[in-house]
Figure 1 (tube, rainbow, N blue to C red):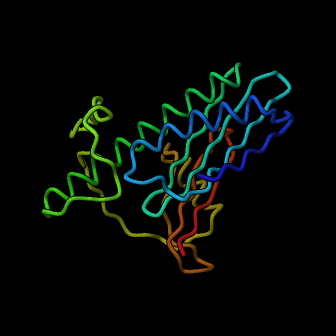
Figure 2 (figure 1 turned 90 degrees about the horizontal axis):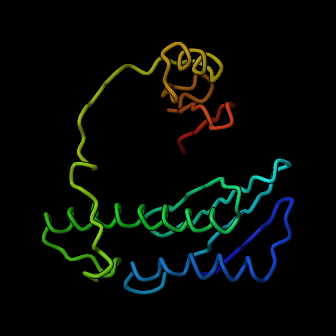
Length: 182
């Protein structure tokens, strides 16, 4: 894996770089071969001395992404590593179940019983509800108003300008984001 480690309001020391690489490289054990992936790590320190760690790893069949805030940068890196590991295990369980149903064995994920000890429960991936609704053409501002009126943290709509399906969502910082389908 290729690491791109960036610091905002913090100097990325060799010790921090080494710690990040050591923790993230532990994810290799979940793959049959080490993926040729770029690991994007963003380390931030705010004025209140709170540290935020963001990691994005685009892989051929999924994108791993996690962020964590903590008073201690190293503790945040530990938590990120755990989050990414849970994401991989969850995805691996889902993929393996699909391949078992179809009769094919996946070659992308390593089959190592020792690393599969904490299994993801089948119930975690169970679809419990399906909704269907008409996508009303509107602009993003109206979609945000509709989302807030419903009390949801996201809202799917047809963008009246592009006629594409878009999603507005409320971010953790209280602002809004827009996802545009391509």
